[in-house]
Length: 177
Image (cartoon, rainbow, N blue to C red):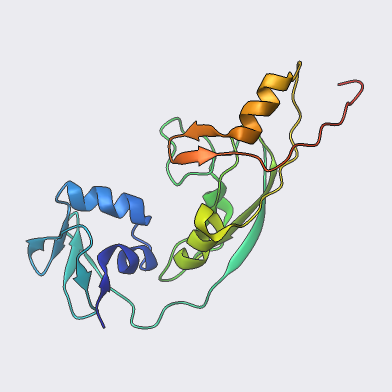
């Protein structure tokens, strides 16, 4: 049964669907010796190469694994950091035929729990706004937060990947550091 090339390559641990789309656009993905097309349907019998490297597509996916990782300040949530900083992926258990996917991100200056999975569809359902998964954040702000800031955060702020907003904010005054 044919599926979109993005889904199968992501399941094979090549890259995220978005990154695979970029690779296809750059002509770095071949299907049966021809440049792949965005949205192309392939099956397990097709011969796929990424940057000249053959990619084996699994007929049976690995069982879903989920980890909760305590990210430390100074670690980054990326596979390769051009600045050479420690990444959260360096300490994770090795997977045979898939790869770890971070469900969301935490900033380099943030510590906290991070969810990781080897199931791309699970990660997509947990992250994509259309699935309506609520997230709760605890944030410490140094300085004053005025009514205008609260208004912008609850009305919506345009990010690179679309509009984001908080459903509600609960402010607690904290004395000291």
